[in-house]
Amino acid sequence: GAVVSQHPSRVICKSGTSVKIECRSLDFQATTMFWYRQFPKQSLMLMATSNEGSKATYEQGVEKDKFLINHASLTLSTLTVTSAHPEDSSFYICSATRLAGGNYNEQFFGPGTRLTVL
Amino acid sequence: DAKTTQPPSMDCAEGRAANLPCNHSTISGNEYVYWYRQIHSQGPQYIIHGLKNNETNEMASLIITEDRKSSTLILPHATLRDTAVYYCIALPLNDYKLSFGAGTTVTVRA
Image (cartoon, helix red, strand yellow):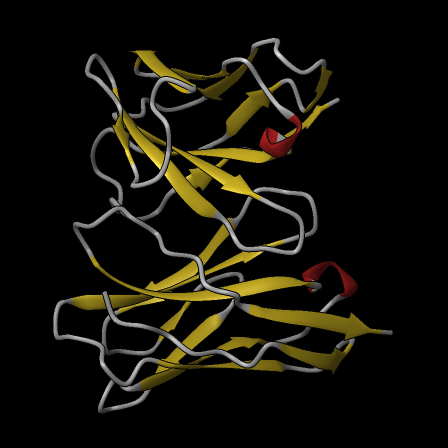
């Protein structure tokens, strides 16, 4: 149980285009989902926290107009990188926590999405 | 949240126990010690967590010193699939912001 999927797993796009990444909790309901970014040879950095039905909370330094997050249901959150540029190339990872009964900090991570902007 | 300190890397032999240390000398009373790992090009995976008692699950054991200033994650019989970056994080139970430091890169060698 507690599986989180991401789609696509890998995407290559041209500079200036927008890319949408989906994060789904497959077998549980997630009140909260998180989006992380990881550059090569660096650790994960939290970008934003997404709660179902409300606006996402962004970490300091993360542009909310560039990284649009939508959490429309208890099993789906999407991250849209708008007007992507080469410096946005990174590994984007989502995670989710269970709705109830679980340890709040037992986050379940998706497999990640490798974004390359040409 | 308390800062944690881990060695940057360590090697261990396949089939042997791997003991991963973590220092969290400024940990506060309500902070748990969490361990996650990240295999190359994958999302992180939860391993175990504890407050002050030693914990064991199917993946690993967590030994926390009595003063809670340090802990050790034990992988009892390391396999090549355990090669990963291991992160030790101190966090209150009802907090959600996992702060991933540099972690320890563990390489299991045949």
